[in-house]
Image 1 (cartoon, helix red, strand yellow):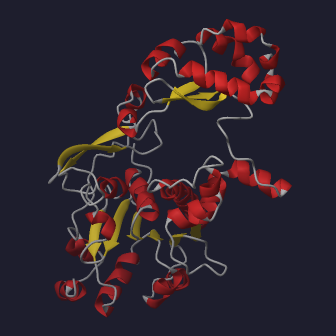
Image 2 (tube, helix red, strand yellow):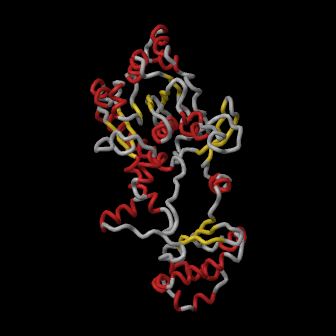
Image 3 (cartoon, one colour):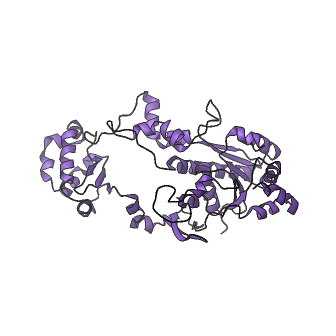
Length: 400
């Protein structure tokens, strides 16, 4: 069976994470994705482990490799008229333009949706922004740290009452946004194939932040009130809480229907006497006495190591998880049994693992084993495919 997007051409004019990650997923689905970069390459390409504070001599940027696998690289200086003209000829053969450039820059370079789709109505123009195409912040530059994390309430919600706001890890909102971008592009391709007309696809990091925390956002929109932040010392449901073990690790209990699991948990913890305690005899009494029960649970879990509790809790039908380090998590046998990680063969870095696409298709394997392209490696070939002659190619690449 042919790849779902075989024959689809994508021109990606983007940097960092969200839009390039969408481009990588489109390449996984079989699209020919041409990544347009500045001559020296985007900063993300050069963020090797040592640059980010990790003691490693790995020569490439693993996160850049993950978000740019399977693409071709075209380096152009868009301040050059010849380079812009060459890019427009590449776009003339494309089905999709994927970008995270700000609207003013797109218009400056003649790459805005109105102009490109005015010339070719069948073109699909997909854009990623911080705050969306309308409103006072449409031109405001952003990362997911600002638009997705800080301005949506997520940063405020995800810390306990007496702790400072939590710092987001890199790319959380970006990778969620990439999935929305791909969904929109696939829908636009479907309707274009049916009706012959493309459209604009727009995804904003701020909107993704509200969608990801949709449970809380919907509650606040309906009630006008802020959801209470979690306090592990006095949780609403002590069976939906995390507790420290003797060796300084953590166990996370997620038994939302607490009455269903309470007897089995008491037996697993070897605390049958709690079943006779009227303060803990149901969800409502446990809520009213949550501080007392949370204190007892904390003392109980502090008696044994995480490994001991893992052995004691497993196989009892309880909903819980050890709080793993990332180093432990990437070795998790369950993740490995389901192909969560892929092996990339890189001409310079050799073989290394990366995160595989987050969806599996039974009729289209997505091995995700192709590396990101070397900077500018495909420039001449891509321009030649667009119909440029040798002199035109030389002029387009002159300022690189």
